[in-house]
Length: 76
Image (cartoon, rainbow, N blue to C red; front, side, top):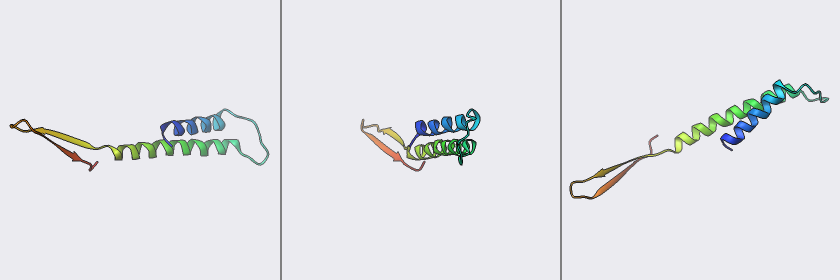
């Protein structure tokens, strides 16, 4: 899952919740729409949170003798 799937759920959910007025016996399409919209928002938030956790920083230091050293910082 990712941003695309979350956006899809959000769009379909809002269409069902706000734009569809059909009635299916035993199914509240408005409620189904709001549930899908909420799931889409949650998917987008979780994708953003997990993506931010995967980023890592590194710094490269050049020494006077011409060599370089790389330091990885995965504490984000």
